[in-house]
Length: 114
Image 1 (tube, rainbow, N blue to C red):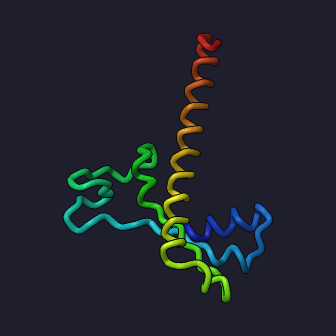
Image 2 (cartoon, rainbow, N blue to C red):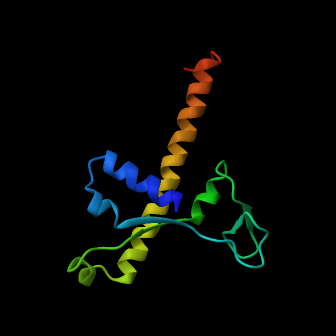
């Protein structure tokens, strides 16, 4: 989809070869059938609207990597699942950093920065 195309473009712009970039893909995980459209279930009984302003909405993004042969013999499904968890953590940390920087710049702009 569009997320994967954007990801490939960013990776190629960062110097990754097109062949290697094509091994990555993004998915937007669908809401469970019992959930309202446009929401993501995080924990049992908690529905979170799929909103880019909500940090928990990022949990619905899944980055997939398909390693080439013979690397696919080394990277097990468990290792690739761990990679997905690390990606999700890094994405949340990146967003937290952005939020903190925005708050800091807001304080400086209002004359209260120290």
